[in-house]
Image 1 (cartoon, chains in turn red, blue):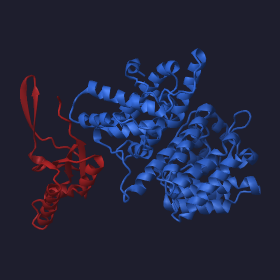
Image 2 (cartoon, chains in turn orange, brown; image 1 turned 120 degrees about the vertical axis):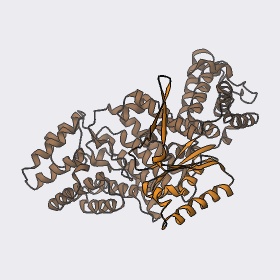
Image 3 (cartoon, chains in turn purple, yellow; image 1 turned 45 degrees about the vertical axis):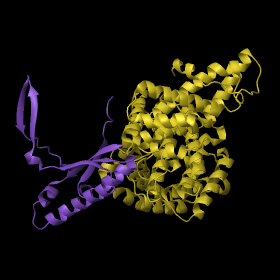
Image 4 (cartoon, chains in turn purple, brown; image 1 turned 180 degrees about the horizontal axis):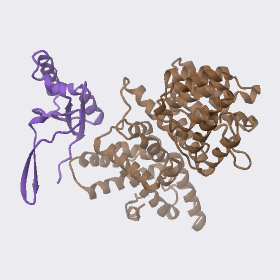
Length: 118
Length: 457
């Protein structure tokens, strides 16, 4: 089964990306995680995201697209990146999610991908 | 149940048609009904578990099995009860599952499962070879990804075959709410890919705890005496504070006693499946000790009888003896846990049947241990009540005063215990505490007890 792992990071994690003192540790943890997923042969896709302030939202209202800055949710944790993995079941996915660097300090949310429709 | 399933009933093979009964008409039908009921009672959980672990889909397994029962009721009166009814039902249910999967979709996910079913379908199994995977089913039902409120009900439904309406009545929610809760949990298990497996050894203790908590939640949901702090009214993990967490409505004794009996069956089954787990044995001892007192909890008029006023000659000796056996077995493993301690507390209470007195000091000490292992508000309040019973009212009041107000404000047992402690101290604040307790009580029998009784229930 394929699962989307959503790496939810708090503000400190986003800041750590650029912080001269913290960034090495930060990126090493992600590189190690990606290497482990790759070695296991289960990685189907991945991407890191720029911080939440870079988000732009578009909605079609009365047939016309309306573009807005944001959203800027009040929640403590924001999506920082994602992985798509292919594993046997939820327990296997949870085990990988628990190793996700964001799970320590932030969280890692996971959902099964819809199977292809006929 | 859908009548369409009758069409997919399996052909009765030559061995299966070697039947015992040859009577026709009404007698045969009655006999068939009795046989089907017996199979439902004895094998339902095994059959659902087997079908669900093959497909990962509990709802589909239940539907397929229900249809197989319908088919049995239709065909057995004519052709006779097969020599191996379970085997016949599994074959029919498996065929129903395959048909349903074919009808539903040929989506990628369904194909390998259907293939597996077909494969097994081609090799007829003897009843004795249907593997017992009820424990795997229990682990799926109590997986941390499943909503906690659904776990106990889900086990009662899938493992014991109880219907949603009955479960709803006992868990005090509208039938539609319970149905939705159960459907949602089954869908989550199927779609999220919750495995039907025994967890890895490093995960096992926590996961067994969730199974035990769900069994205990099912047991306490069956109580009809919410004021009865008499049954170790606290879940080991603090998630099930027993039935008196909030206002409680009266239940017909029949239904609740029945569900408690079913939960005892579930606890026995768990111990049968994991005989070496001391907490499973502790849970079984706990529910047996408590269940032993069920006849003594109401008087002839149906009024609630507090534990200290119960007539111990009405307690079941065989159930107490069985409980003691399991508790001793658990203790031999030398791994103490909350359920063992709760069982030990009930064991001390039940010793009154032999000694005529209650060792309140011992009970208070056991609550100390329990409060250390599992400091839930339910345990902490019960400990204070035990300290009061041990004649230390001042100390009991201190224990209650130390609890944070936001955790106790709407907790009925807290106000019951507080009123009793203040009474013992001749403190005029007892009255307002009693008023709070009454306001949080909905069961008339318990309300009556609070108004006219004295001391903790």
